[in-house]
Amino acid sequence: DQQVKQNSPSLSVQEGRISILNCDYTNSMFDYFLWYKKYPAEGPTFLISISSIKDKNEDGRFTVFLNKSAKHLSLHIVPSQPGDSAVYFCAASGYGGSQGNLIFGKGTKLSVKP
Amino acid sequence: EPEVTQTPSHQVTQMGQEVILRCVPISNHLYFYWYRQILGQKVEFLVSFYNNEISEKSEIFDDQFSVERPDGSNFTLKIRSTKLEDSAMYFCASSYNGRPLQYFGAGTRLSVL
Image (cartoon, rainbow over all chains, first blue to last red; front, side, top):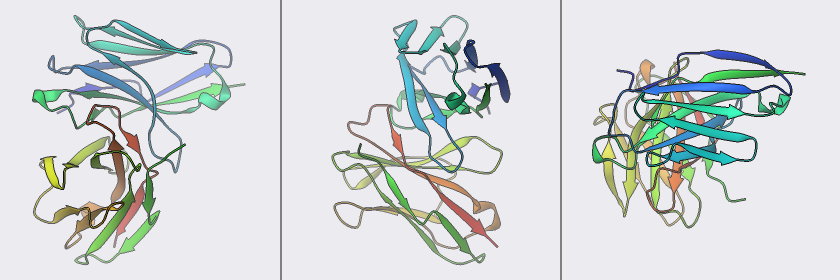
């Protein structure tokens, strides 16, 4: 069962433009969402997170938006840089009262072209 | 910057053999996790560990799996009798206070032949 879905396996964006990565979830008990970035041969690296009591969190070029009614979140990267090329994972926590384990989406491979 | 380290980076084993994957979590972290990612699939939670005992485990974490913190720094995942379907990337993670923000190691690629 896919409780966290990233429906776009890949995204290609021109350098300097905005990258928008999307994530949908099905479980309304999730109360915390995270984005991780992963380069080949490395582990997931934390990027940005958002609590379910907020609808936006910003950190430099990265902004995460949460729409609870639609069970949808998105990551905006502005401006996109070639070094942002990686696989981006959406993850959720708080399932069934459990705070610890993260439920991941399948990831979106972002390619930023110079 | 503190990081989670995992060894080995790649482990090749024969089906039915026991393997031990090793992790050194960030030193002041108290919560430890193992995840796995089968090629082409999503990262899946296996087990969480706190205060020297398992706090939560998934359906994947059956009797063939065990975890241990043998000393003050290492955290290990043992697979007693490996199967072909255990071939995957195994990630160790740790967090300071059990909150969702977890820091991941680079992973161990396990290949079962």
